[in-house]
Image (cartoon, one colour):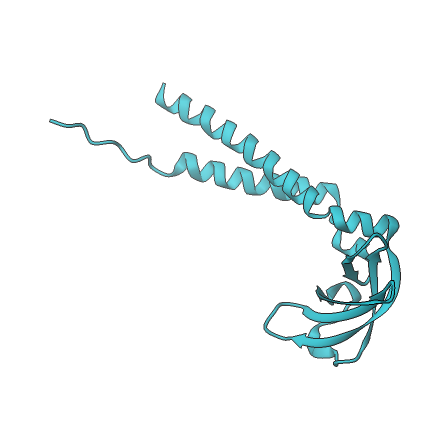
Length: 144
């Protein structure tokens, strides 16, 4: 009976974790989907290299007569920061109604296919749920 309760709890936990990860991964990419659909392409330039931040640079671009400075990754244009110089031009996509949302290179590169989202959520949720089943449960001591 105790094992059955643990299995039911693990399955319920797995389902919640799986759905939570799936929703999180989907919503995390909503800006990229908007950029892909309605983004405007412009040319930006690198203003700072950040070698201690994986693949990240600080870039600037102009939109609507205003200058925007953002952090972004350069992997989407096939580069690493050590291959770049301050002043290098980079393609930037931004949303016309909110230029604070931008991306270096094609936004498509940041959107993972649905099957990858499902597979990663499935594997993570399964691993955590199996661990919860396999780890010994602490027994509460009974008072004498």
